[in-house]
Length: 376
Image 1 (cartoon, helix red, strand yellow):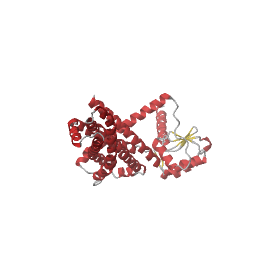
Image 2 (image 1 turned 90 degrees about the vertical axis):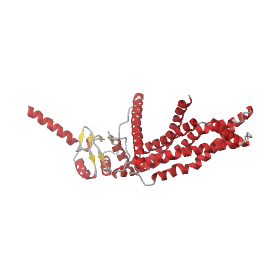
Image 3 (image 1 turned 30 degrees about the horizontal axis):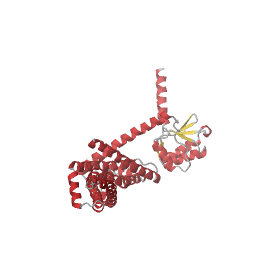
Image 4 (image 1 turned 180 degrees about the horizontal axis):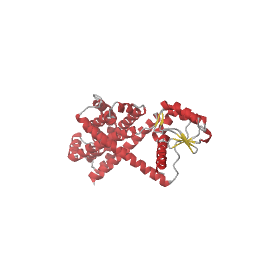
């Protein structure tokens, strides 16, 4: 009896192992093997001809771990012989993505639809939030680690990449930042001047322009422009590289994508952001100066002296300090969405839009948090 039980156990175990390697029917479902690649497709086709096709109503992909274009072609052949609208069940995200990429047939729903239940939707959203948060933390840790390492070693980076990125992020953005800051300074001073002159408080326009541009408008305006310009560029570049499998090629060459792609951008924006914020602040103040001189009849000397009286070192440090957090947020969010791309050109467009919206949102949130910390 013991020998019989042992043999039964061994047989069951062997059958369990072999079931993952060979195609077989369970009920009305065709269970596919662990590997659907070109080396085994010929044998699978021979095996398939021996099966009773009338019993098959669905394909189970739960055992499939590896699939290539030949394996997808094999699935298309099965569906053409039985039913093109046959259900494909229990496919992992990677397998489903490969099938969607290489299949020449119209795909049915690969995985069953989740029940339309409020609690299921809430739970699914929470799971996605936890997964996304974990991935963001991992990304921040990688960027922080390799950025510190990159200060002392340029290994794994292109020569001159930081200078090149500084030109793209800083120099090329200087014109639009200066123009918008000048216009903003003009508008801000003009709107306030109309009220201040009614009370004979013309000189206080300098207070308004100095404090607002140094600690608030200069940093946040620069960050929003970088979010729309640099954030979208980072997300689209990384997303395109992933779609075209350049990221996989870097990994095959033992090159860390974070160190090769993201770290030069991180270093470049860290160098450029204080210069851009300073330029934005000064140009915005010049716009206010023009209004003060032409509309409020103030001398430029009294305007400048008043600014130096009211603007403190604390205001300057607050403005420059939070601008660093804004800049790092833009790089991290752009990189995160770039690495999360799915699909082809359409996916690149989606993650680029998401990166810009998320960057602007978090810049405003961080600015609000900063204001509550330092001004209350």
